[in-house]
Length: 133
Image (cartoon, rainbow, N blue to C red; front, side, top):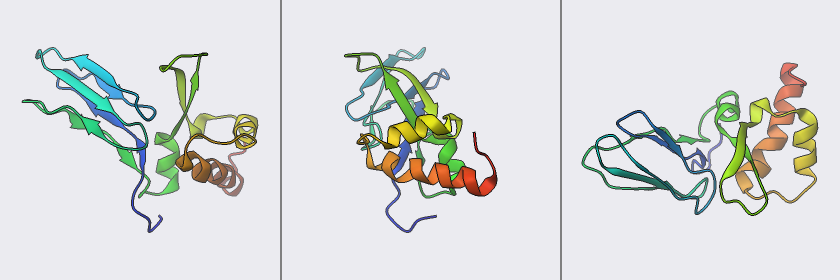
């Protein structure tokens, strides 16, 4: 565990009807009208937590990097986008990424410092634990 201020690695809520909303990147505004008729909002990706204020609050499922790396790797995702889309086509936990894909991502400038820190750590974790996939 690190001694820095905990950083967001997953920005997520569960509404009262069980719907899970995730904000994957900065300014990724997601809204949903719950079965109770209230509108629930989440925004901010890995940079900030923005929520709607509701009579019946949502459950916060967000995760932070103040936990062991064996847990961080389950919650931190890399998202892929179709050209011009603000919605990710898929988001994959770093624990499930192919080693070659992580290496190719690291050859390019990374969009977020959390990924800059934890993708190399994922490769080290796999090497030291024998999980070289």
